[in-house]
Image (cartoon, rainbow, N blue to C red):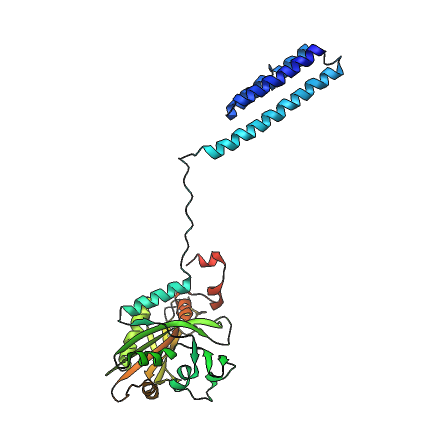
Length: 339
């Protein structure tokens, strides 16, 4: 029995030496065959030793067998781990580096700015927190006008507001330039107390202002038509509808033909669900009111101008066909990646 125990210890020692020399999984496979295979060392012990008649000897051989299994398994895990760290398969395609993109509102602003730059407009950005004079009084909006009600406007103090429009840029641009000509596009954030499928408390507007000698409605029509065809597509048409704004006279609403029904109001003989009439409202426009020109220290007898104020999100919705303005500010990456 003592001789057999010594032989078992020799096998353990031999295994340890073999494991130290092994560095590949194929080496471990060879050791598995050597010790646990059909002709291996463990089977040889079972065949040559009286394990059936000597329970203690049989127990010792089984313990040796389990010890060998555990050590070989641990060695195999070690070699595979090293292989994953050290070996690089240069034939495997590399992972694409994730690429970000500009938010769709930023994309729209940059495209809008680019279109008006081609017409010679200069990009401006005027305050979002504004005094009552630039926000209303100087724009010919009287104190009792509904637009100045605190249910419509975010007041910070009695004389300071978060701008509900970008028209404050008209007075500030006239103060800056002091004399004609003016060709300005003011793009910025605006704030209103409303939220639904087509309105949010904060949104973006772009305000156009042109002042010079001899400016008339035909110039406004030309700029409007150029923008609509450049931004929405050459097939789009525009029209004017009489309206009323305090800071323009005459005033208009600008409409653009629907991109879904192509201005017909019908899709496959069914009324268009997007426009219902063939037209979509783009935004307000008009000739600058003489009082606004005077408040900007311009003489309405010497010069005239036109202005327009349209929503960035509004034109984006018209162009892309989005059904709900609130989707634009969704943080769902699956939606944003479409743009």
